[in-house]
Length: 120
Image 1 (tube, one colour):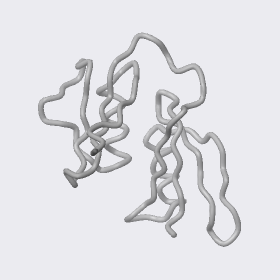
Image 2 (cartoon, helix red, strand yellow):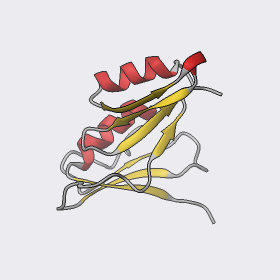
Image 3 (cartoon, one colour):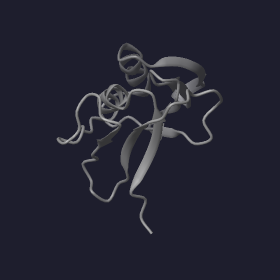
């Protein structure tokens, strides 16, 4: 088995996909446009799962049961946290510890939590 999509329910698929495109560096599919009910982010490695944003009528009301843990490849964890908050993420919890260990919990513009970890 291979995971095809990680699907994220949301109110504004294109806008949320733009945030995640900024976060990951993955492009929005060329066939998707603002106003679409489904918008796809395409990873650089075709073996990776795509991120699919789907419009749903209900809003997020509780903590995510599944979330992404991101590890920076071109910046430090702290630089990524600063970049992502500038792009629209909000700080949920700061779990940074001594010697640079730990992670930061952020939420995307629609409130979906994700973590930014330090490089191991």
